[in-house]
Image 1 (cartoon, rainbow, N blue to C red):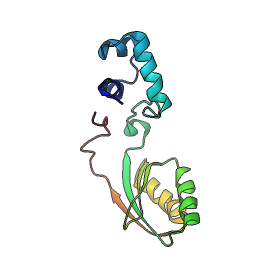
Image 2: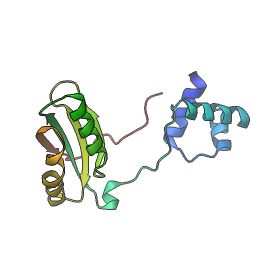
Image 3: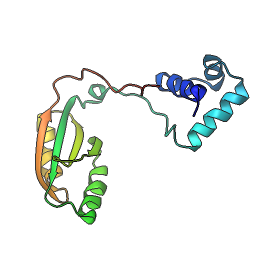
Image 4: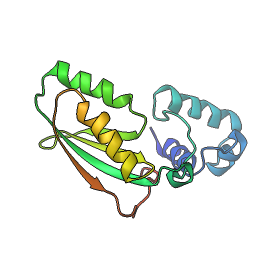
Length: 150
């Protein structure tokens, strides 16, 4: 990956809806050269998809919680079962396995505290292998998800 590829990625992270013509102009490439590079970046999964950035509050999902998960056991089968189960919960918008304690960090969005409490009791607490859940309510998003540095 060279500087031109990085510039393509930076431009697309700012505006993924650019036409190929506009993208080529912004990175100073011919249309065919830009198209070839773009397809290669997609092929190697440097570009994994294109999405709209949506305001969760506009969807009635303005309550955000970070959930720290400590596992009772950490064998491969239990972790795979947990990973599969948590990936099916639509209100979990991000899940990361961590080194050390806790074992996982989940980012969860719901409508309000009552909705989160139901999700916690009926779903999160029932996930395979869970020993302990520790929830922290997000007060304010100081830095919104942003493009990766080029």
